[in-house]
Image (cartoon, rainbow, N blue to C red; front, top):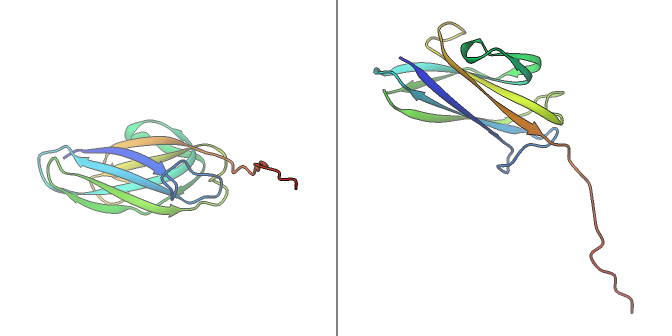
Length: 136
């Protein structure tokens, strides 16, 4: 049994998040093996990353989201979302990373695959313009 991953990150409006704004992380997992299995998905949001695939690890400030079980038939692909993630001191302007790993068993044993997705957090801007002046 094998697992394949893809990741997306958005704000509540479907765009890139701004500073302190909650984010939604969507992780798509596909069973690339030939038997049905319950996989375990873990997600982190981090300032940085190190490693690759199953050896991906968060660096700097990070927060681990809950581990979720996912039953998949061979070839089946399912997207799961973690909504309204707010992490004090982490969602600030700059590049951040979501790390996802799929495991054969609960916990952190028997990793089958790992992936990451960088995303940019922007600072909110305040601006205004005068659109007309009427003198009478």
